[in-house]
Image (cartoon, rainbow, N blue to C red; front, top):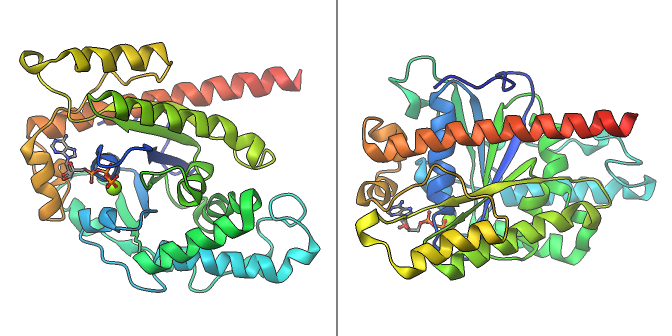
Length: 321
Ligand SMILES: Nc1ncnc2c1ncn2[C@@H]1O[C@H](COP(=O)(O)OP(=O)(O)OP(=O)(O)O)[C@@H](O)[C@H]1O
Ligand SMILES: [Mg+2]
């Protein structure tokens, strides 16, 4: 898969967050396959499992343990921020590269290298996982909730500071909720994609995500400015099995400007089976139809990212007069 114009490996890190306020719609499966697809196409890809169950790690056969997990990394960063916060606010008064913000181990040392999964893909990049341990992720969530909106930028700042230049992409899987953990994830994003199923309740979950994304700049005092890229329809049904609800979901996504991707992912037992062997389908069986759906989706994602970047550059130019 050739990267489209504007996305040059090695230039800058783009953080893509996969979200839905409803559970079980395929966030983890989508995150794992998009990440694997980008990595096999040659990008350097990091993933973060911001979810209590730790299933993204399992998808890659990466099993987290303290301190090599997202919860410990966030709490350790909050601790160093607290130690120096009498001097000001990180990102505005305190520079992100301030050595007092160093954490040990470093973020990259906490990540599990799963590049071995890409064996056999010519010209592939690399694939890393920052996993989740339930009790520690729970603790990070509690600390963020306690500190309120001022702490929402924490994960973004940690990523930019620690691995900002290293990865081409960081993909973050998030919990099915609208709580402090989900906000921490959304605030870390450059781009957010929602996932839904052909069920109205899940399309509504995508709308909740989009609305949360729109509130982030104000809630973080302008520190975080994620862009909503659109909604992925997962577990779609073939034409022969369409129901009135399937049509209603299509209409809902358009009516509420949830920008459905043209590439859709059908329901396929091969997709769910790949979770059990800890190898996303795009890696395990790249020739299968399901893997082609993800490849098309990845290409559309890259196109939408390029478009969003162009729109942002244009509006910055305009603002500069
Ligand atoms: N396109 C698909 N076809 C068939 N099964 C799928 C598909 N996508 C996901 N699944 C299966 O549906 C279940 C839920 O998927 P997944 O765990 O990715 O959802 P989730 O949104 O991350 O869930 P949670 O909200 O609990 O984190 C899993 O068993 C997964 O294997
Ligand atoms: Mg999940």
